[in-house]
Amino acid sequence: MLVVATHQTEGRGQMGTKWHSEAGKNLLFSMFIQLSSFSIDRQFQLNQAVSLGLLHVLKKYIPGVQIKWPNDILADTKKIAGILIENTVSNNKIKHSIVGVGLNVNQMKFPKEIPNASSLKLLSKKDLDLDKLLLEIKESIKKSIFNLKEEQDDNFQNEYLDNLYLYKKKTSFLNEKNKEFVGKIIGVTKEGRLQIELNSKELVDFGNKEVGFIIL
Image (cartoon, rainbow, N blue to C red):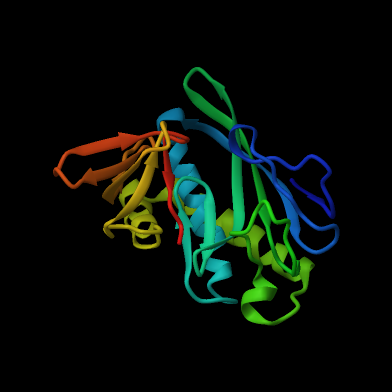
């Protein structure tokens, strides 16, 4: 099942964050995915499959598209999409999931409070057909999730890391206390925690909202 909105008055992202979108300009949709007792231990692999499914389509339209851990898509360091997955779990199995996606497509201006946002039109200089793009993304995500069921998780992990923003690049981050530190991303755990190697060579795992990126 695919549910689409042309406009949201209370769009949201992970952990209560807001999602702003100009009416009729972008893609705002949710997909209902039946997983048939998918192990809860693999819920981050589901996130990877959805991210890669979306990425495969976007790369056809613009260069430099990357996944920003844990649930954003960047192009030229600008955020163009966000993903929110909510799972229904029973007996440590994911019965089904609702995959929510917000993708900036034809919007040209963004609020001052989100200066790091961009859109496919701003980057490609082309106006895109929303319906055509939606169908491409739907099929790509479906295929990616089907492959996740059939293949080994290592296949997704390797492709995910190959497309991960700042992977193995020394850069500055912010911790929970908003203090800057330097390190480099060297991986993501099976549970979806970001692995950062500090200058001291110490390896630290961070959960969502425990570390922030400094995007220049």
